Image (cartoon, rainbow, N blue to C red; front, side, top):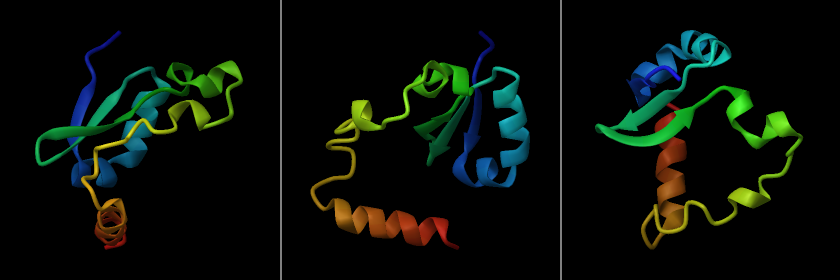
Length: 84
């Protein structure tokens, strides 16, 4: 597999069409915030969706502890950040 592409969040947002094309071609993109990886944009074949899995239940609790003690405030801040 090719080395993943690495993009900052703002850059990834502005280049989403190109990153989706890269995903269709089998490339993964690691999306970072302040230099730290926070998400991966990957080909659908790398997910359970390609194997008939349609539920997010296997991911339940997978982000536990990532948002500090006040997850509501963090989610509010992230929503505000992405709605700009």
